[in-house]
Image (cartoon, rainbow, N blue to C red; front, side):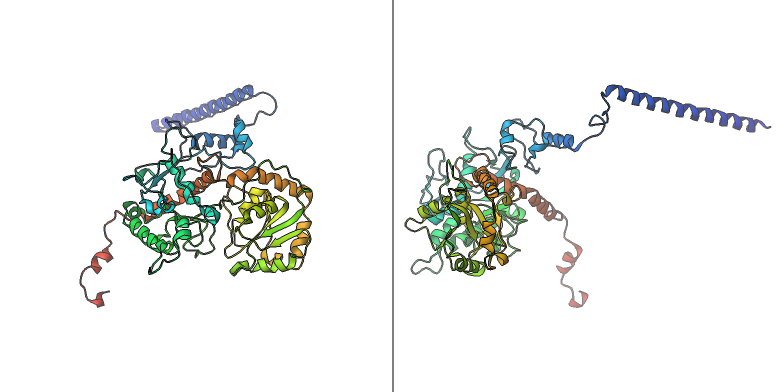
Length: 502
C-alpha cells in the first residue's frame, strides 16, 4: 500500500467518525429540547398555544400594532383598516362590549386627516345667509351655528354636519368624538374635502330668476369646477383624493361629469352612470330623518295595531311604478294604511303617529331607489319593508340590514296577495327581534353637533376612511411615470417628419 493510499484510508476513517459524532450530538440536543418542553407544560393537553400560534393570538397582536397610540394621545390611523373585531380581543372594555352587537367602531379607533379648502362663503354658509366677518370665511362654531332650513331641505343636510365636524376638530378640548382632524398642509392629508353645500344650492337656487340665462346653482357649479381644477391639490391627483358632497340626487348635475374622479357622498346611484359613481369609489350616506326619534318606546306587537304603513307620493316614474301597483292591491286591506301624503300642513305629525302605531313600514322605490322614508321608519322603530331592487344602503359593510329590515323583490311584491301574505306570516317573535334591533342601531343614523361616538357623522367618516387605501393605490399608480423623461415616440412626433415615416 502506498503512502497516498494510507492517508486516504485515514481520512475516510476520521470523516466517518466525525459524521457519527455530529449526528449523535444532534440527536441528544433534540431529545433534550423536547424534554424541557414537556417539563414546562402541565397536564396532558400541552400542545396548545404555547407551541402552536393560534389565529386569536395573531389577531390580538395585530390589533395592538394597528392601534398603537401616538405621543399626543390620539389614535394612529394611516392607511390601515379601522374596524376592530372585539370578539377576538380578550381584554376588551365594558364600553366596547356594549357596542358589540352593532359591530361598529366606537369612533376612537382611527383619525382621518382632512385638508379642507377655504372656499368663499357663497359656496357653503353664505347659502344660509350667514355673513362672513372680514377675511374669515368660516363661522366661529364655538359661538355661532348658522341655522339650517327645515322641511325637505333637512333630509339632505349632510354637507352641513360634516363641515361643522371638521371645523370643531380645530377647537382644543371640545366635547366631540375625535375621528377627524383638519390639517393645514394638504400633503399630510388622507382626503381633500370640498365644502360645497351642493344639496342646499340645488334646493334654493335651481330655479332661474327673471332675465337670467343660468341659475345661481349652475353658476356656482361652474365656479367650483374652475376653482378646483386650478388648485395644486387637484392637479397633483386629478381629484382622486378629493371628497365632494352631492347627497340630493339632482345636486351637482352639471359639475359631476367634470369632477367624477373624486369620491362623492351620495344618497344613491339612481341618477348616475356607473362610470361616474359606483359603490367601489363612492360613499352612501343616510338621509336625516324628518320624523322625531321615538324616545322611551315601550310599544309592543299588540299595541302597534296597523300591520303595514305607507304614506307618500303614489304615482311615480321609472322604478316607482310599483307604488301604484301596491296601492291598488293593498288599499282595501283593513289593517293596512296606504295613502297619499306630504310634509305640508301637519303631514309630519300624521306620519309620526302612523309609523309609531304600525308594525311594518313600506319603503318602496320612487323616482330614485332610496328615500327618507326608510330612516323615518328606523327612527320610529317601525320595521322597514324594502321594495327597491337597486337600493344601496349606508354602512352595509358593517351593518346587516336583514336583522332589522324585510327585503322583498319587486317582481314578487307585485304578485297578487304575495306581499300581504308574506308580511302576515312573520311571527310576533321575529318582529320583536327586529324591533329590538332597530332600537340598538338607530343612533347610527342620527346627525349630531358636536358629533357623538357611532353616530351618522362618525359612520360617514369611517366609510370615507375605508376608501383611503384605494385612493392611495390609484394615486401611486397614477404617479408611476410622473418623473420619467418623455417617451421616444413623443420626442419623435414633436419633430416635423414626413407622414410616411409613421
